[in-house]
Image (cartoon, rainbow, N blue to C red; front, side, top):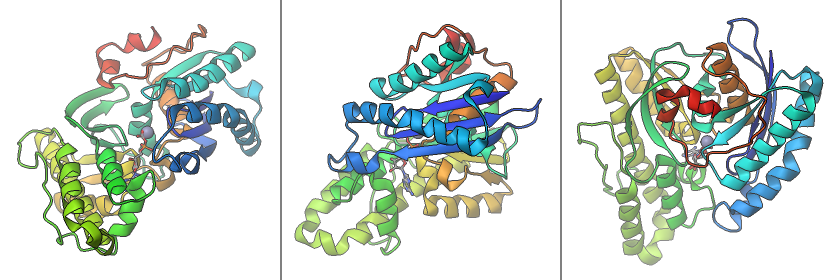
Length: 351
Ligand code: KG4
Ligand code: ZN
């Protein structure tokens, strides 16, 4: 079965082809990505209308290049998958509209995918694929969640952020330091030259005993510190970046270890854009090695948004019998869509 996947939830247009053979893990045939980051940088953040228009321009040429690279034709596609949510409504509608138009033209069914499920299952695209069950640390620009994952569509929320996401904490702190959008990778790069102990920043909810996160206070502390530094900020930026990263990483690390202890599981999967952070990876690797825990990440280039994870999640849902594709081309997107609603009512995904 050949699955075409389209991602357009935010500022990346992604298209991919994934092939399934029986019960074996689906194989990525080809994928292509266009990042809108440079377009949005001038505004310091994503401009939704510009994002939608750019998705329209990019999606079909990207699809063409994916078919060329894979040596496949449009007529070979069995299912067209697209990101149904969460994300920017207008941006989601582009992917959904194109997917439904292709599906209708080909007489093939479509399947709406949850963006976070795409991230969650993206490590299955790597050579070192995980096995169920595992604890998942999902750290993206909009979400920070710890989950127990027993199989495709079998997710139990263990804890999540009560305010800002980890990616947001990186991005907002970076913005305060005058770094370009999206700040996470820039802040991480700057942090390499800084001293993480140079400033004392709060570790929100570190000792709360539960698995929830809160990063809004950290952003405020970074702002206070930046104001205090005034003109000296420029010279101390690397130290402030290193201290900010250390605070975020320490909280993510500690809560992940607590989740492993509480569940008794010996496998950790890290997914989402912040999963590309090198310091986070180094520290998780060391802590997991000490505990005899196997840790899995998506390939670095598949940590941030892409079409491969959407095609993969669709293929894995179909293989697991969790969802049937539909020939109702409704392109009804869900800009807000909690991941655990997939668990409570899997049939709702078809509604
Ligand atoms: O998963 P993603 O591509 O988009 C969402 O679904 O939100 O994640 C984007 C987030 C941004 O906040 C970005 O700053 C962050 O991931 N990010 C990083 C790094 N690379 C991307 N944060 C810290 N260090 C990085 N190397
Ligand atoms: Zn994402």
